[in-house]
Each structure stands twice: as C-alpha cells, then as structure tokens.
Length: 399
Image 1 (cartoon, rainbow, N blue to C red):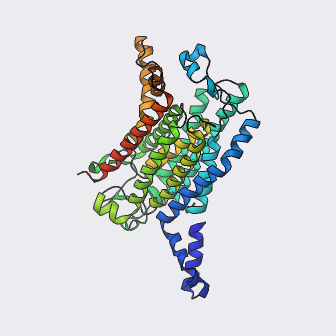
Image 2 (spheres, one colour):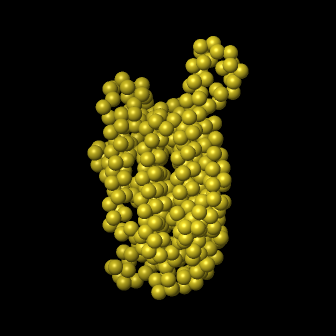
Image 3 (tube, rainbow, N blue to C red):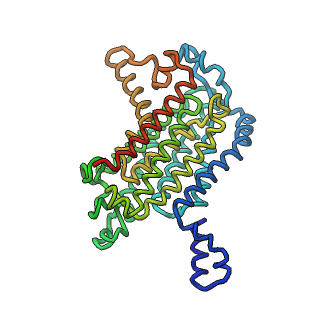
C-alpha cells in the first residue's frame, strides 16, 4: 500500500500537481529500507497492541497447552508443571502481524513476497489445525505425523514449483535478452544462472546444477525448516529469539541480493532485481517476533504453538530459497539444525543400539536435565544463534 501511495504521488508530481510538491517527503516510500523499517515497527506494534486481547481470548476459550505427563517425560514434567494451562495458538499474533505489515509496507504482488506470505499462511493454517486438535482432546498429540507430513509436502511442492517456474524468479521461459538485462532470473556476477544451480558464498561459482531435482530439494528445505523450528519451540522464547536472528540475517541477505552493485560487483552473490522487496517481509517477521517475545519471554504468558512454529519455519525456508542462499541456512539457522539433528541422532541411536545419546531430545531438554535453568538454556541458545548469524553474514566477503 505504501508503494502504491508513492506511485500515486510520483505520477502527480510528474503531472505538475502543486500538492505533490508540498508532500515531497512521500518520496521516502519508494525505498525498501524505509518500508522495511516501517514494516518491522508496524508488526511489532500490532503484536504489542493485540497481544493482551489475544491472550485473554485464548484463556476464555480454554486453549491451554497440554503438557506431557510424568510417565512420558519423567523429571521434565516437574520442571514444566507450571506451564499447564498456558494458552497456546499464540502464533496467530505472529502470522497476522506479518501479513498485515507486509500488505501495508511491501509490494505484495512481488513474486518473492507472495510465495513467502502464502507459504507462511498455509503452514500456519496446518499448525492451527494441529493445535486445535491438541486442545480439543486435551492431549499433546495433535494431527497424526503422516497427515501433517502429507500437507507439509503439498505446501512445499506447490511453493517450490512456483519458485521454479515463475519467470521473474527463475528466468525459466525468459529470453536471453531478458536474462542478460536482469529483467528475469538470477545472475552470479555478470553471468545468468539457473534456479537449480546451488550456490554458497565461499565459492563464486555455482556448486551444482540440480535441474528439475531442485523442486524436491526446495521442498525438503521448506519441510525440514518448518519441522526444525517446531522442535525448537519447547522453552519460553527460545524459538522466537532464534527466529528474530535468522529473519534479520536473511533480511540483510535479501537486500544485498537485490542491490545490483553490492551483489554482482562487490560480494558476487546471486542477484535478482525483485528479491530486495523480500526485505520488507523478513523485517516484518523480525518485528512480529519481538512483539510476540514481549509475552512469550520466561515465564511465558502465551505459546506460539504449531500455528507459529510451522509458519515461521516455512517462511524462513522459503525465504532462504528465494535469496538463493539455501546452504547458508544451515549456519544462520544453526540452532534449528542442532535441535532437529539431536532428535534424528537420538531416535537413530535408540533404534540401532538401544542406547540414547542425550538425556532427552530435542537438545534443549538435555541441558535442562543436566542442571541448566530454563533461562540459561534460552539465553545461551540465543547467543549461539546471534553468533552463527554473524558468522554466516561474514562468509559473504571471504574470497
């Protein structure tokens, strides 16, 4: 909406309208940096304003978070016993704030913005269904794993196909002239690259060209990131803080990837003229995260639930693909990866060796059972997330 106001004002200015000269400050609305900052503040303010009402509403609806009993988690039940009844589904605050801010501050018809918003909304809806079943049955088991995975696969494949076949994103179907002029597709340095070519900042040439295999690869990233954030969401504010860090880091990456000189000449990273607009979406996500953290910090007044965690993971995974820094997500989202890998290793070890590697998985519970206070685990994981994000950004200029 803000950019449309700018276009309306700019048209009036070129037409010699006097009022347009008076309101010359509207020229700010064309800049991604300004609209991204406004989006961040708007999503933060929206979360802060609607948060108390949402929490009261969830409490009145008795949408309390089911906690696994002592037979399932033993000592952890004692540590988390006070969390019983804390309202869940708070992720609606995050998803709603991000969508509102994105619609107001970005160019919503931009293909990069559209695919990220739609993926986030679809994953959020799936998470909402899962949360609703949990609170309705008063059990920690929601939608069956197979059903959830099926719908995650559908969402991820649709998003991946959109990215792969949309001309402005992939360049598929564009003429050589369009690709060379940067009107469609990505370029690395001065050379156009295909959407299936996977890049990493340390190497200034593509690693491999997956071709059509990029579609299942992209889908795996979206599903994996969605589930990884979901696994991380086990302590007050843990997933929220790590989300803010990752969203800010990828917001910077999106801005740089959309800036011709910075991307093609200085950093030599994949460049697309349209991807810079994704900065507005990602900073709106960071702002919503800050707003939600206001209520989600220890001791939490509300949990995001699968409504928030699946939506956030889907959005971050899609954004990483859109920026063409998929592999960098392993570093920037390192805490999410660590949480997911701890579960995989724990399950694999128990099935193969009948022995557990960790006291409990995901790994944040392992440290709790080893004597770390919940706040210590959260803050130390936040610190780790910040350091990993900075390291990931630092790799852009190496070599």
